[in-house]
Length: 230
Image (cartoon, rainbow, N blue to C red; front, side, top):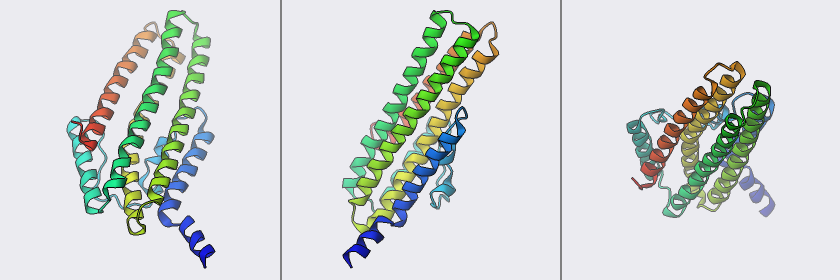
């Protein structure tokens, strides 16, 4: 009897949702190689089996980000997520943000060096391709860690709260992974600018980095609103 109960717990619906989404997203990333990126799959609502009616992720404006954070907090309250689990949302979300800020910094170091060293087009394209591949791997590793932590935390919640706590995690991932889409699309813009090699190539790369700053402003605004730091 104990073995059967344990097996049932291991294959609970919420755990299968989180683990299945993680595994399929990794497979998607490995198949895509130079394509951007794992996040389009992860941000697909149907992948998680969650009803998102009335819960729309923010895209651009600070006001929309505040609204998304408010809806998520309301959702957590309605689902009766306990304070112990709620406290653990913040460090995992912060780690996701920090990891992606760091991998963006690594790519910027590459583009800065390419410009400073006056690299030729072919060398610059290859270095940028390598930088994007490293960034993709770092992103996958970060998402792996966050999913592992989310599963462990949810597994330790009362059984009648596990599904709702998992739903809250998915809502966080849904918005955050839309941000990572923007990050990786900007990396692609930089790569495309280098491959086209116009006379103002580094100005175009600089413009992309300026846009990247705005993306991280959005991310931190969303995070602060979500966890009450604003």
